[in-house]
Length: 547
Image (cartoon, rainbow, N blue to C red):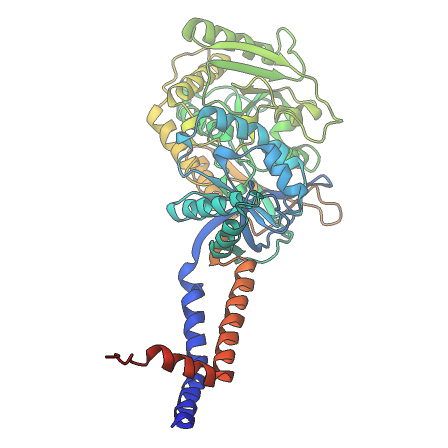
C-alpha cells in the first residue's frame, strides 16, 4: 500500500510541476501589449548651416526610462518636465552618456509661470549650440504620460537610498516596481536631398513714367525654435507677415483707382529661410542683381523696409546699418515715422538703433543687412531692441504672445507712414478682424523651414493671397549647392514613441531565484517522500484516548 501511494503521488507531482510553473510565470509577468502607451514626440532641430552642425544628430531610441533624480543615467532615457528643467540637469544627462532625453511640455503653455517660460526661451539657443549624438525629444503632456513620469520619478528617487536599514525594503521595491521601455517607431535621420526654400514676390506698379522709385516691403514667413514641429512663430515672424499682407490689401485698393495711383512702385517680398541666415533673400537679390538685365531692384530703390516681430510691446525700433542722410527717401521715412508716433500714438516709444554689419559673424543680425551688403538702403522695423532677443527663436512664441490691439496700432503706424511718404495722406483704414484672422491662420500650424516645401499649403495660401491683391506674383526657389551646401536639413523630426511597462533586470534575478527554490523544494519532497509520508501520517493520525 505504501509503494502504491508513493507512486501515485510522485506521478501527480511530475505532471503538476510544468503546469504550476507555467501558471506561476503567467501570474508574475506583466503583459506588454496591454501596458503600451503611444504618443507623439518632436525631435530637436538638426541642421547644418555654412558647414557648422547644430542640434541632435540621432533619432533612434530604445531604452529604459529614468528621471534626472537617478544616480546612474547611462544608456537611459532621461525624462524631465518643463517646470523642473534646467541647463545643469540637461548637461548632467549628456555627461553621463544618457541614451536619450525627453522633455515634457504642458498642453497649454499659458498655464506656465512667466519666469519658467522666459528661462526656457533663454536656454533654447544654448541647447542648439551644443551638438549632441543623444536623441532629444519633446512631448506634450497628457494624463498617461504624466502617470509614466510620476512612476519613473518614484523609481528613480528610490535608487539614491543606500542605508543598511533600508537595503532589504529597497531591494524588494526595486524588484517589484514598474519600469518603462521607451521606443521610437521611426528610422535614423538622414539629410534631405534637393530641398527647396520658396519665396514669394508680388508688385503694384506705379503710374506716371518708367523710372519710378521703388519701395520694397519684406517679411520672412518661416518660424524657428528648438523643435521644428513646435515652432509656431506667432510674433516672430507671424506678426510681420500679417502686417505685410494687410499693407498689400490697403495699397492694392489705392492703386486700383486712377486718382490714387501713386508714382511709386511697391514691391512685396515674403522670404523663405529667414531663420537660416535669410537664404531666400540672399538668392532673390542674386537673381535680381546678378542674373538679370532688368529688375526693379536695379533701377531706383527708394528704400527697403523689413518687418520683423511687431505683435507686442509699446516700443518700436528702426534698425539701420547706416544712418540715413538728410533729404534722402530713407530720412523722409524716418521723420514721418517720428511724426506719426508723436502726434497719433503718444503711448508708443520710437527710436532708431544703429548697428554696423559684422561680416565676421556666422549669421546676420537682421534681414535688412542682406540688402545693405548689396548697397541698397534698408531698415528693419521691430519692437525688439536687440537681434539677440530669445523671443525670435523660441517654441514659446505662440498665439498669446501677439496682442491684437498693439499689432493693429503698429500696422496703422506703418501704413500711415508709407501713405505720407507716397501720397502725403493719412488715416489708412486697418481692419483688426482681418489682422486677427491672418494671425490665427499663421499660428495654427508650425512654419519651420524644414516643414515648408514648395507644395506646402502655407506657401500655396500665401501665394493665393498675394495674387488676390498684387500683380506679377512669382515664386523664387532656393536649393543648396550639392558640392558645398550652405544649409542641410534632416528628416525624422516627428515620430511616434511607445512606452512599454517592464520589470527591472533585478526582477529577472529574483524570479529565477524563486523558480530555483520552487524546483528545489519539489525535488527534495520527491526524493524524501518516505520520510515526508511518515511525518504526515504521524501528524494526521487520530489520537487514541486512554482510559
